[in-house]
Length: 604
Image (cartoon, rainbow, N blue to C red; front, side, top):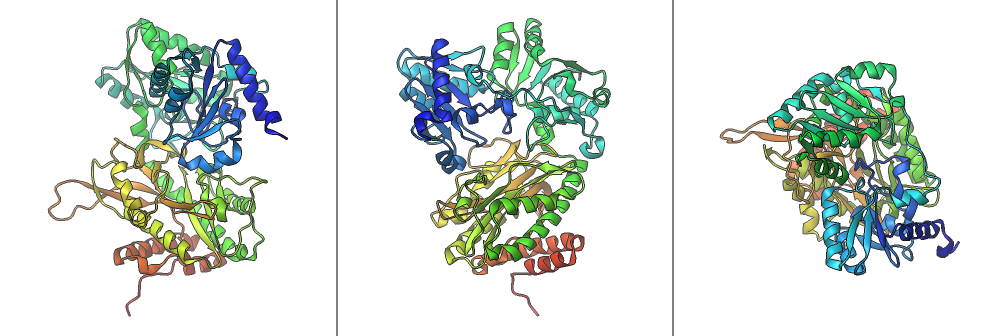
């Protein structure tokens, strides 16, 4: 099939025809849905439908004679594989962002359309400024023109919501509502619009099944300063038990009523909190037009949700023990089977999921497993398909990044494994990545420290070798919610949120050699209080590892580790052996005992 007759070419032509009918010269197509989430429902997969790109972050701009796809460093190789360069120019969003491209490519006098429900306010501002520089105009549309040409677009999910009981959530929804309402009142806000389904889920102790991999209930809500909530959702999604759980303080309204409720707040002159970095631009625009005073502060649920309570932390530890059992069984199996050259990526991922599936409270994977053998491991967010599936070959690396959703916790772990003996370069670079992981995991830092202040610790040893990785060092993780949670993160991009006790983050430095191999080492860890030494003037924090799985000792060059690094590694492996060893079968236990042997010289 030629590019000119491909489905992507036909869809691009259909969209351009619709834009012309609407009097537009171009249109912006983001990966985001109206909730600005990472995992979007089938009916919101507009970017994938138009371009073929299936990554979790990206944006396309379509003009009459040109089109471009923008992705970050995680998806550079994937975009090349999935999207024809004859149809879409490939741009790195950090080096050549959409606004700059629009400023260069948009003809003078042209109208560039956008759907205000699919963009954040700062994105709109950047695009508007770019259009102005080019002599054009950015135009908000009432109806998305792409939806008009997507003739086989799926309908919205009607999967029922469920209750997340206090057994797992640790706090009653009424208590959460009261606390947050008091906070709004203290900030002189009379309501807050919740656009993030994870916030709705956490606040009301509910979960959904509207998207893959994350138990999110796709719904908007308005929290009022009297602790009442308006929940905008199709009533067909609410079983009787869930309606009873919500109680009289939660008013259920159809999704189409959201605009009217926002306008009512505006007419009453209310001061309304709308997270400028998480809510679609349309919400603030409706409120302001109606007369509301918009407060652009953070989602009131975000920080409270990020700081897990003792019940949630205990649940996460229990989920990671179950996950550790599955990982030990998988790694033991892989050690025996992979050198034979008969195992491929898809088969390995399937076996790992089967080992997880038997664990208590299992609900499914927390994201599509990344199982990259050899050169495929260099694709940061690689996803194996029938076309790309590769066998695990001797003398190559195998990178597997996976996780599980359990009713009591969410897991995410990456291990890089040597299939047989690998070269000195691979071992050295693995060890440099491991040193960066230990540097973050073992650090003690004063309260008030942000993740961006810790990021360089993970890169220091790679930098010294002239190497780096093009993604963040760590992201927040929810409690049976999204595997990628804010506001906490560890990244060289600015993060103004201080790390606090109870937050769960990943620690995942890596290195990727294009067309050769990939290395990533990832554990989840909880932020905990650390003992203060004599004379300390500030409270200290540190990390408690939650993930329980050995690192591949055959890839570690002990000569590159100092005494403190060796001590940390041996202590971690001793903990894995102690907690997981008694819970697995005898064959796995024997493998685990060998895999967790100390690396530091033992004194007699």
